[in-house]
Length: 336
Image (tube, rainbow, N blue to C red; front, side, top):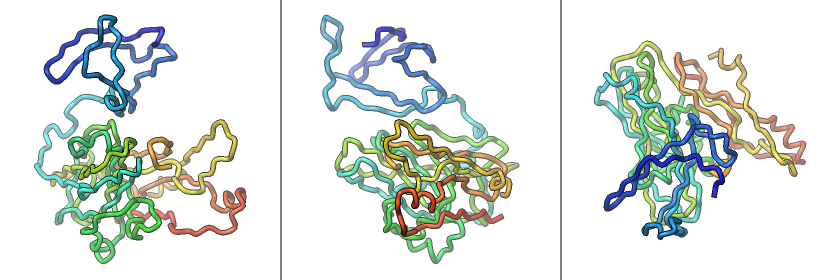
């Protein structure tokens, strides 16, 4: 038990199905046993028991089932967003294809090629919201929608009716590899993304119609028989805004060349974006990934700025004489 108690109980009530407690706590308690509450994603652990505590006031042990963990943003900004007066009624659901999670894996990335609706003229996306299947909120870790840039109908169309494939797998079809431009993203703990009233993501018209949906499932309990069709709901409008917006991927590339020397108590992997590039235009939740998504405007002709160790140097350090190269990390410019 924490020797310094920083939570103040304000009240509580219950009904036939729920018990609710209202409490307060300082954002920063200066207690080494407390985690600061900041404006980012926080892992919250919870547990419960079906019976009330006994006369001693001590709660009963919850057991191995009545517990869990959830990533949430406690300081999520409140407000209706810039689209309070924007409701075109037009949206596109980019969803997983009723995918059944494997029960023998705790982490799975599933990718699916999608085709957006035919929109003859340019529109602007003003809101992106998570569309998570009810009951699977604790399993969907993040959703990313990639733009398949410069992929023609002959290459991408045959995979629209394909059920999809495990992402980042050696047998994944090559066309999936070319879907590299991050179009929209959502991570666990996030809410609806509202764009500023003077910026929107281009959609329709001459923009590419093919996308790849990536859904990361986190299933540490290895639940069986779970089917999912989560994804993103893309809201768009014919009322064009002043600026085109886009998403930039930045950080350290997740490649086999990121090698940690043995026996290191800690090791820092840093990603650096070269200003000249920008001016010109480990996979599970138990591991860290040094990537960030930036929604910005006006849009430039770049989809990513990533850092990766020099392959030849790393190979020499570990004694590798030859490496099979499946993918060339080249990032396609936007059509503009």
